[in-house]
Image (cartoon, rainbow, N blue to C red; front, top):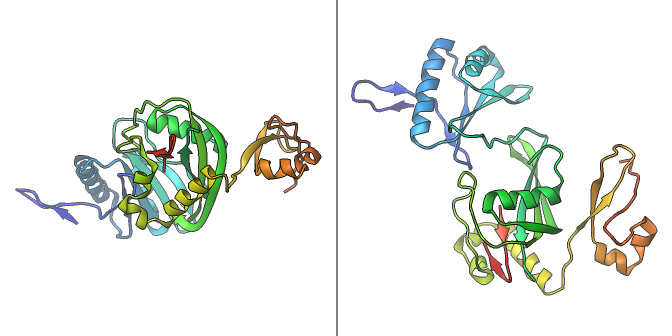
Length: 277
């Protein structure tokens, strides 16, 4: 593509917008490094003027000669597949929020109700994300549900966990790089928003929450366990209420304080007293 200029037309890299304020470039046209760097610099300048953040360049194997030029311009490796290499760049002068690569992507939706690091547990990640993005302190209660989908994020699988949290504070201070706005609103008003018709998963989450507050639904509570593979404690998520009623937890070694000893071989939604953000 080209950008209009009073003197000349400047060629830019063809790109598409991602869902997080960045752009994705899928390279295919062969070109020499000097020409590519000139177009790349003009493109980054253009994207910066548009307020873009992350730049993803998908480089097919037949254009591997451009890798060195990209690295010298500040790009770094994100992931590699048999037929392409993905490199990334962060335009703003701030710490980047580009996620690390993985075979599965895990997302956490925190439902906060009032009566980021590698290897991070879901219950810890949910509390941290709520704090970082809204400024609200909370404590983890349970996993209400999770969704699995395939071929979603750069052809990887996606795991999305819906977590129930209890707020310990109510003042909101948003993280502007991650969310546009946040406020407490009545749950009925939140659930009646027009965009709900577009997302079946959000309507399902609403139904689960309503069943939960009516006492008709129980999620999965984290129970501390130990395994033979690591000395570090981990969590088993289970329906503790049902197991307590059946006395199964005693047979499994549950001590009543959220601790077990077992050996194994094998998008922030917040609700406060029926209020939602």
